[in-house]
Length: 259
Image (cartoon, rainbow, N blue to C red; front, side):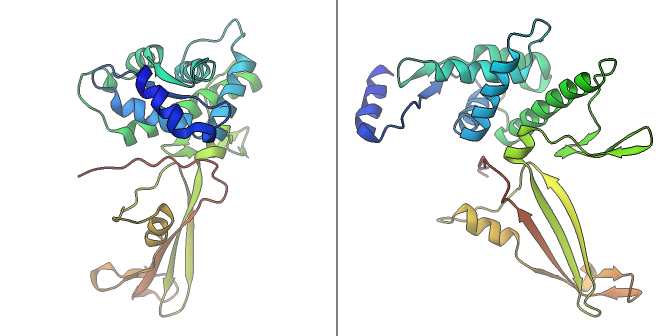
């Protein structure tokens, strides 16, 4: 790897990013799914910087317990602190914590990178919500109720609380608007949903932008797919469109599925 690393440095030359580190992650038999996601997250610079800021502000707390958030931050800290620009690091502590916390990842079978990314992001959100709940109410550390892709509003003393927006949400969460239009009365119905990931059809020689446009293309619902219109009081032909808002997302992680 030393020779390969020197070749990479020579190839990049003066274009090697200042202060950046290109380190491979050791594979523990079947952890390529994990390593690929960790590499992608490390090079999501806004996420990485906020994670390291969080770690530097919290690592000295005496009652802080080890979790996936601290293990991930420790791994990123190790990479950034390397004197060499290229090399290999073993994410042993992170993998051990992952297997301890979720039995799905304890076997020697290969796992799905997309499922792991979803699990990890939701776990990070869960940890941050618990910490925030503990700060606001030391007697209760339960996080606000949340969906698979993000938090929902909770009730406190009969008052609906705004969902906690963590720096994980700010980096990865978007808004998906499902919009239907009745072609008979032109009534438009829209529903917003938050998301951490979108499943896109990837076409050959296409870009993420074009794939998002295809995802948001208009579809006509007719025949057996007709919708019931409350205004027309009958089954009618609808147009359906998904609009994904990614303007506030700082990082996009692309996970490809090969069938």
